[in-house]
Image (cartoon, rainbow, N blue to C red; front, side, top):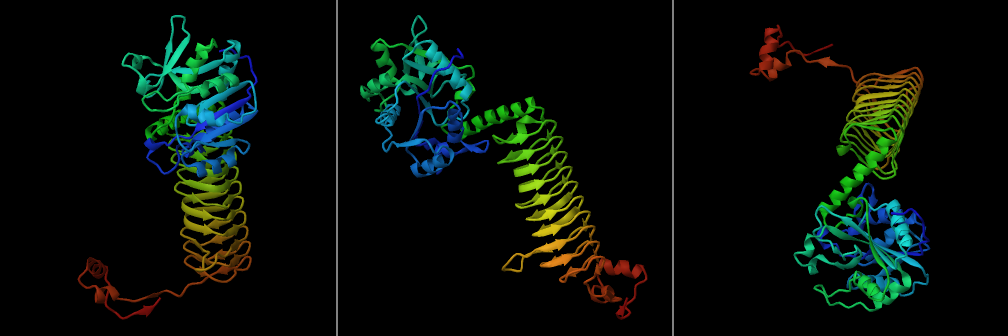
Length: 483
């Protein structure tokens, strides 16, 4: 294809299909691939062409689709096709009051892999050939379900035959119609006005306009795409997964070309638009989603989910789930940690195994190594939170905050009942339930004195193996005493 350019006056996206084979309550074009809806992928690529006017024909799930379009393409005009009577009928509706002249690009709303670069080359080839209509085609390994391209002895397009109308001989053709067209607008207006529904579906086929243009002496061309995967359509959940896998491989390939080390690209899923710096490493079975950003030399995974997370340079997140949070430079998370919304880890901070953190600020070099819950807290620098510590932030009605200073040592199995404050350099004794503030440099102790009930096992559990072991160790049934 030539890379010359031509002005694009209008784009019509056909997105009115029922999507019955998806067997889903969600409109087909609103299903997600790589963090964006199918229609979002399509419109994102079209926006790069800077068309003068964009129209999207909607039908099934109209309210949901139009609401989504207002978010992703607010300048687009929505055209409602109440009765789905074929692609020709959809285009008739879309051009009724279309004021522009020149060229109109028509494409399907369910081809999320189609790239603007391919469309640009297609438009340039159309202009270079001085065509009235051009059709983007592709050679499919399995063309089942697609319209076939018929060419004459001079390799010019003769017609497009839909699968349901094709003979067995025509079904052997592997060049298919991708559903991407470029028309002279005036010729398109004339052609769609003459459409008839004399086919097996009783619908108006846009493809019949091509034969009409050729009969009027206009030049029609079939322009072959370089990569068939770009024009894969989606009609069911299996095809959705197939396109998702192609998109995954494309995204991962781009990151690896930019210096990111992805150990196993087939099990690594990265949403469209994610930023990852060179020399970051992504281990298998990890998912990076939303607005996640990963810095240089960071280590992610294995088996890690990051949703809207900012991971600074040199940090590591291993076998953990993190959502809406920030992880500072050289901080360490995991394994088996859960960082929830509002969590901010400063540089060199550590969140260890089986730790959950929510809406909390963790200071420079502070460690929460294992088996703890930190909720609604502000923790200073250089502090250590002992194993099995729980920040008791909820009183059954409201959440309350815990403030812990610098270089604090929280003993294992401490309950910090918010609202409470622990001063700089303070300690808490292991097993304490802290309900009052602990001043700087103090030791907070909140537990009753231990007492041993001598001989209890021999008296209360005489037939057990514990009693046998105790007796062998010289235990007696002497009454309780303090210790």
